[in-house]
Amino acid sequence: SGFPSLLKNGLSKIGVPSGVLEILFKGVDDVEDYPKIPEAKGAIKAIRSEAFFIPLYELYLTYGGIFRLTFGPKSFLIVSDPSIAKHILKDNSKAYSKGILAEILDFVMGKGLIPADGEIWRIRRRAIVPALHQKYVAAMISLFGLATDRLCRKLDDAATDGEDVEMESLFSRLTLDIIGKAVFNYDFDSLTNDTGIVEAVYTVLREAEDRSVSPIPTWEIPIWKDLSPRQRKVMEALKLINDVLDDLIATCKRMVEEEELQFSDEYMNEQDPSILHFLLASGDDVSSKQLRDDLMTMLIAGHETSAALLTWTFYLLSKEPSVVSKLQDEVDFVLGDRFPTIDDMKKLKYTTRVINESLRLYPQPPVLIRRSIENDVLGKYPIKRGEDIFISVWNLHRSPSLWQDAEKFNPERWPLDGPNPNETNQNFCYLPFGGGPRKCVGDMFASFETVVAVAMLVRRFNFQMALGAPPVEMTTGATIHTTQGLKMTVTRRMKPLIIPEINMEGLKMEGTARILEAE
Ligand code: HEM
Image (cartoon, rainbow, N blue to C red):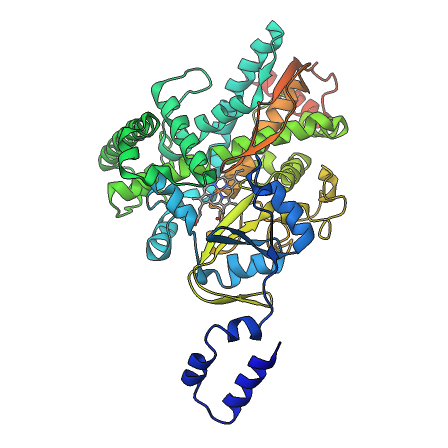
């Protein structure tokens, strides 16, 4: 079967011009010269079940680190191999775009940082990354604490009334409140209120998620777009959010113009440390539409992901009481009853490992989407431009050949004195925030946000699956959701009686100082 390629090579050696060879061997050489990517056949039905990344895992075990999946005229390459993932995301990232992701998200994110490609992406990335500098993230810690404290109050009421709580929706509201303040200094206050704007955000999010799993893009059909009540509702919700964003941009612009503050390098303003304020104060020269697209992108990127991470963390914790005890010991020791500070982030090591491990088992999003914009070679397989590619982070994170007891929730697999695991030190076997130039810009923000939330919650409460709670099953949009919520029973913890010695010292010194003052 290698004869055509032998012949082609031979002809080439005796001097037949390559142009002529291309014509002679058109359609023959691609097939014969190179190994062919394994093709998963008859798998189309499996893929239509609820969480699409589950059948992809089964296919990975059968077909390996790269295979092709075909549905009628469409085909996708499914990548679950760390070195191919590294090649696509990092080493040859310029040969890939966001492909269908950009098409699906266009209606809500426009040319925002997640879907944008090429020059627009490069310029916007350069403007936005500095906004999430260390000092900003440090300033956010108290915001994380205040927002989580609001949630704690709500849980306190539930504990008093003996009412079970649905944690997934509460986490979604917690992270919406946080990201609104953090990105454009807007208090959705969704933990207390269901305002029109909060509902509009959810309408748009649901639509984005439905579109990303819908096989037929009905929203592109011109008449449907105008007649479908659902599409009209989405358009109204978008308009409401856009109006609010435009107002916030205008207000912030006025504020920046009036400020006579000498800014430090970070353009921080105590009253408004938001990313929007940073962008305007740093003289980001950009159209209002682009700015709105970027704000909307960060709102969505930073909201559902963190909410899903917290949801699955509490689900995992509910099954491992020994992990919860260790977690509570650490938090009692490090925090006591204080709100967390930036210095605590280094000390809450085990809490951080719990987050690392939760992101391994439930990566958000479970697959990364790319399209080749040049011909390339993946492993030993040449591919053409225009291939749609799914990198299954789910498969990488649960591969039995890459991990010991891959399915087990075991924060201890990451040594406390070791480095914080990331894609680089784990050789692209672990990609909680992606990798390469398109890596998440909010990784530190999200880690601290969820460490603060977990620490404060387990410090005050014990969580158990509620009696008669529906089974916790997965479904996907952009992130992994539960099918029927995470219903839990919350009980107040007894305060620990032992106060760490360091604090005793602190108290004594304080006492002495007061006596001296009184004299
Ligand atoms: C990109 C995960 C929180 C903003 C990404 C990517 C991943 C990710 C995997 C890469 C996507 C790809 O390569 O296709 C997460 C997780 C989060 C989180 C798991 C929380 C637990 C946040 C937050 C923000 C944010 C809080 C904003 C403040 C972004 C942006 C991008 C991105 C703007 C696109 C970067 C670019 O393309 O240049 N995120 N993210 N993310 N994330 Fe996050």
